Image (cartoon, rainbow, N blue to C red; front, side):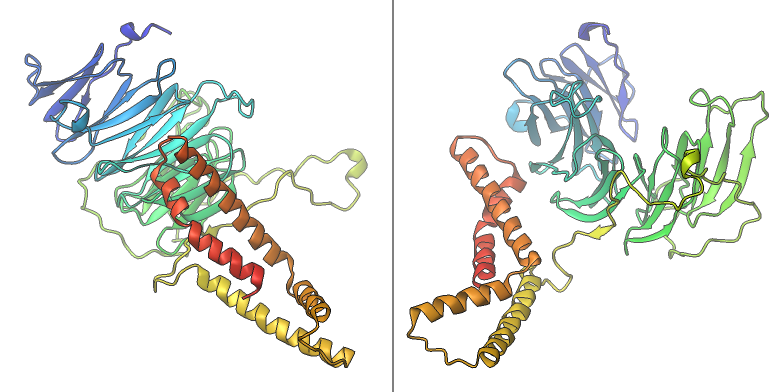
Length: 464
């Protein structure tokens, strides 16, 4: 790898091509209106490693990444062109350790970005491909660490074109896929599956989870508004995927030099029907496929259909070969055994549209358990046919023991255990804050929920 001073970085243009930027040593040079003889503005930072201009209209925003040195963290800083003077001019700043390189993704409205920070080596030895973390940075100054519930690499991240949510594919295979809102809270979990890529339709109403490369090419097509699965076509050996600007059709292709055999492309409808197929001659190669571009807003979102549209093309996807069975087991019954348990999709929204709090579900459970305790006490009285005197402490103690045994169940114990776990994590965060560590926004929100969690734990333990 050449030293940093010899790395030549390509210039970057804004969407309207009125602004061009390029990295020169420790500076970003900006040129306006294609006048490359005059440097309009400069941004000076030590050891700038990467930068990205925001999409959309003016004013243009700039995200810069500076890798950390010994004892100092790496950071990503957001600016609005041409306000570069002083640290106070930065719109937002996010510092983090464990970052040899980053991938920065703006949303379409240039109001926030995702930063995937990666290290070359995972010191825990859990992954050959290093360690990755995901950060959220908004132009209003808000920053957060996106908490991913499954360990493993981050395969892909994509913003919804409406800029209000993003989807992440992550975790050791089978990977999990989760949609998050702008508060970095999970909205919907698609469960686990053979996926390593995510694609939103241009209108943002359909999402495709795909598994390419060393995976089978399975496509899971989802209605994002209702979180309903539309289709699950198979696009084997695909090296390229792209939505048509109309949000109705998809192209998948097998191109050289990634694969030099079986080159060609297919046009799909999102319901899973193959509408057109093209295959090159055996001695020829296909290098690139692209849709004709259209301006944004030309195509509006149409109502989603869940039935496959008619097609004259036959689906010639090869059937999956049966699993190998040793000769000694071929005449015996098949026993189902899995290396892992598949996780089903799950709606992660904790509040309904009517504004009900999440405690309402717990209160409903407690009410049912309270009623069950009353019935159990009545049955105990009828069975024992004994008179209970409240003045006897021994009898009161035994009564409490009976009621706790009757009310105890695995679900209640699991709920109490989870609450204690959350409260323990909050105590650790409070200790970190007392030690002078600056907490993220989502970590501060966790601390603010302590009183609610304590009340909920008290109600559960008392059986209210």
